[in-house]
Image 1 (cartoon, helix red, strand yellow):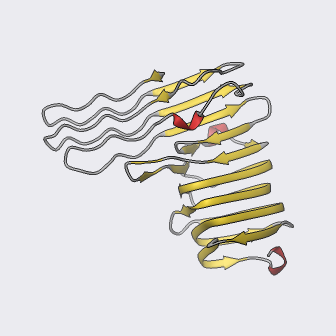
Image 2: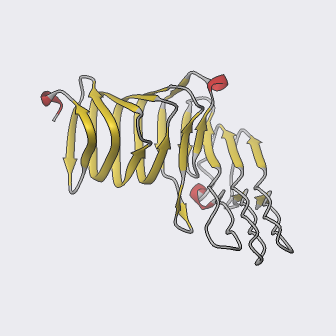
Length: 231
């Protein structure tokens, strides 16, 4: 286990924030975990520390078991409530496959945001859903292969977010975007969803692809624009 957790607060003090872990390796094997967990506040009304940041950059992950057991959750405050989760991802360098597990932040200095495959399967710890953030400016994410998502995701955008993918597959959960933001999903081939909800104020579905929705899946928006041929 590699960990850089925040300290627990004492005598009315708040907990420390989780630290940062950056791993760059050719091959990752074993069953270890990465922790950057925020510290708990003291019992005397101390605030909690937020989760830290973890990025594992690799070429071969086939010998590493259970990557989503790692954690970057926030601590618990002494007066109740839980701090925000941090960011956690595994990035395959050669093929540009990104697996987001514990939240993420799109930072413009790292653009363009282009991947072969993108998987979003964040953890919910202590009732707090992982957050994906745009860095206070519009973000455009392009996936040449498949975008996959499951679980509960909260996406805080910088005004507008465009997600383009050849294929999209969503299972058992929801993706909720912040209010007043413009969200565009561009599907080029095949999109499937099983018991998955998209929730946004302004949502546009573009592209030449076709969606197949099953179970309780729904696109929910105050203003929803789409082509009838895509369903």
